[in-house]
Length: 191
Image (tube, rainbow, N blue to C red; front, side, top):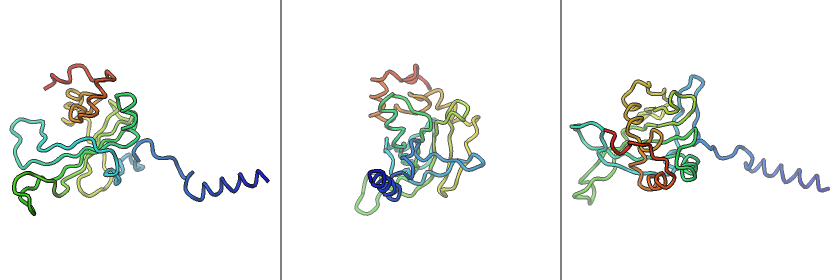
């Protein structure tokens, strides 16, 4: 009799979806058969790290400023809170949005407008240096990694506070990295 009750309980758990698969520990990091990263469509449900306005890494960069919103997969965030560094299969998403002004009742400041593009910064041991960048644009289609010769790799390797990520722009995580002693030497003076 007990075996029958246990079987019914297990069957009910499976039918309810409790055992479909555990929460992805990697922010739903998935690849196509030809190693393109599948667009993480649910990234706005992840942990928001920071927003910036007009962030640029080159002197004299002109044009209209954009807002940058940074999100990280929940499992990677929990890993960082514990260790002060990013676990394998971390996914950080950079969402770029137009900066708008003088809309509705706003007469002064800036607010976020249309989506301009989505990029990802991924830690996966399959990559040279364990990190890769992806540019999805606005279409949400799968993307190939940006070639390792691109400037973004050099800049992140040289100037990032933790791993190859700009934790220096995420105030709450910077404090954790300081406490855990995981800041990269020289990150404050890198130009």
